[in-house]
Length: 447
Image 1 (cartoon, rainbow, N blue to C red):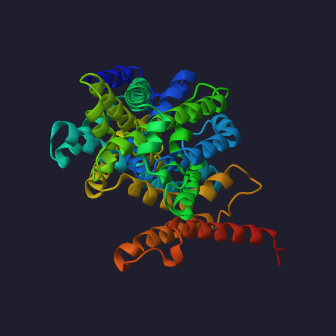
Image 2: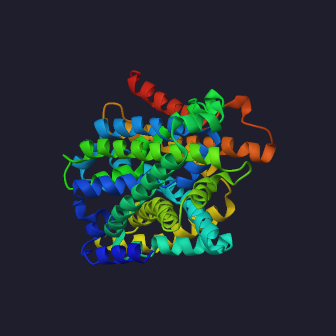
Image 3: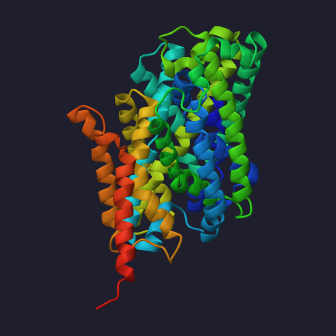
């Protein structure tokens, strides 16, 4: 904790102008680009613990493969185009293509979806488990320590701490996999002690339960973190190969986490809290010192995402929504973001306090964000295929509300989704209908 805060505050000394605070001066080197993006985007370690313990190899087919595919699509088709544009955020692109109304709806959506509630939930659980604190206290301490340096250094501080966290997360999990293999053996041990269905792509679930994550993974194409790091990169030449290198690192980390989840299922007694399977396994098999390193790896994996997404949420509210509406003085960008950081942190804290499942938070957020932003943002990069300017704001609002109401209906009415249709499908169908209506209207002959 002290090292992270020290690095974050030291990096803040280099902040001299607003662009330093917002985009690290657009001078991220290739190593900094890769290390910060890898660590910041892989924060859901207790969600992975929960899922890999429950469904085994399906973890790779749900939280790995679909995200690699969409990250590769972003790298090939959007990354260089975004960097050359020299914009600062997704709402900037929405405003350039459709006007300020679309930018404001986009900014509000990004604020709501980047608040790191799921990751604060994980950090609170980890701190409560290791120190024996009650959950609200652990959550409050974790929230404060994960965001204090952002106030001073903005993205410069975030990327600096992410690089340190990158080293810690890989070191801890590599050590864990080696120890497990040496003590218990490899595939033969796992197949003898883990249910056979956990080695299948579905992990014992229905097809739709897995397939929906491939649709949710499409949000990678409109992932604010990707755009932020691309805009901050030193050159457009490093972004495409940099993201492809990131995919390789994510695949390595997914191999280690999925393997650890299978060992947890084999070695832990039935009935354990699944989201804590990783630390419980470490407590059982690792000696002192090694256990400390692994716990630090868990903390680093979570905190690297909390600070990154806290800054994204504060930027969406402070710069892309409030600053856009009040004067647009570039020098005041850090002021708006700093003030919004408190609001974003409090909202994320309260949501984490009320949530139980990390995976459920991911599912709910992704199901609502994708319909609002996916088609309008992707079409904004093509003048020929752009959304109708007249229909884009109604489409964004309507599709988001439909997805949200569809998501909440079972909570109030009981039962499952009507006809088994997931909320994200309904929202995307509404957005696509608006898009096609606009395209058809443009092609009809004018009277």
